[in-house]
Image (cartoon, rainbow, N blue to C red):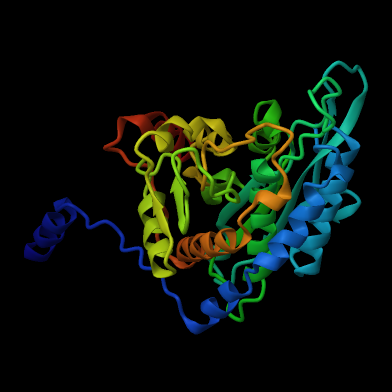
Length: 351
């Protein structure tokens, strides 16, 4: 009886929060060192080139970008994320009309997976994303340049996903949980790709423990001043994920923090919102929230700070691995009223 009473007393005591300690061991350090400024530049100089005509949703340029991203996932040896009647594919496809058109065209979320190594935890997932579309061309734009290349928004996030996929695929010891690398179509038209995935998840949402989205990680010329070796997370204190990434960033010399104004204000302005609405702890990492050429024709690949992007990605990579190897799952912050709706959605999914 005394033992039972003691156990009941222990159960009633406040539980210590899980300890999330980033581990930068030799294998991980080697993988992170593969994140390369030159590789990032090579990928973005194509994805944000005039040849892709601004990657509008839908468009020929967007489909060329999808094929290119899939080729990089294939090169890394990652499994296709989608199973179809015809076999495995990197493309989750639907049909969509262009603005002002009655003709439907195919659009794709591009999905690959690095399978986890733990017998139990490999069936849980961390999703790492960016949107690879932009706003296309405008023949009425002033001047000679009519193409909105979207190098930073969000070509930079897209090449970040590619670079993380290629680097983490070289780990000798794979993470315990599975990591899904995904690029979305149609963010610029209202989170279309991420909303489509949320309604048609390839991996069960109940087993998706976190969503890390990358947006505008390439430019350092923020209007508030240079952003070097630093990034902000939207909704930083809405869940456990902000502090986890802050610790991971610190381990590699990158400050990942809460922007006093923009972290909360920008939470709903990228694809993390789609999965947060479904209860998945989901956040976006950003270097420069507001910068020259935002949604302008001059957002070119030459203006991206590639060495800084590579350094920031190392912090992000370590944060992802910290989540992937932990027995614990991140949770929405029940003490923050701004996360209450997302916590409620998470609780509804657990029933």
